[in-house]
Image (cartoon, one colour):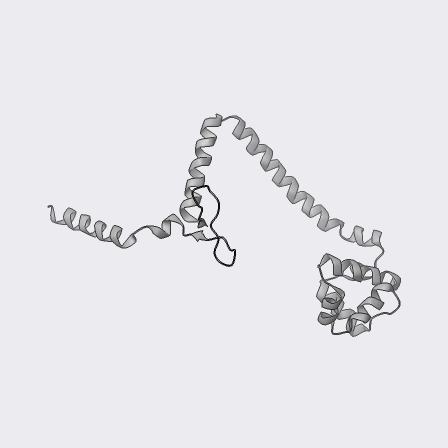
Length: 171
């Protein structure tokens, strides 16, 4: 079991997108220690072992198991993900059946209206007359505020108050 430890640490480190140096800093050891552990020429102390488990949120099987044992231990999580994806795929198939029953024009109209609503509430890139996004001095795309943020709410409120006044006073 201990002979699998180094390769499992290397695998977990890569899954977490960590360099040996980053892992060494998190564990509180030298980079060379991580290298030696991954090559199987050195083994961790119990204290360091606990740190590895905490950093990777790893089970004993993930730390010491053979590749087959690790794969089998991960099977329930993989099956749960498959079940979740299966449900999503079923939903997509149902949606496809529903969409097939509507004319393309109606779907396009709903999609266009949904896009308008999204544009109304979300900021969007500022573009020039050719549709090319404008960028600032640092090369960052300049964003226009959402349409809803540009509404003159103070004037709308003022007009609503005047209408309410007229309605109440019958004039």
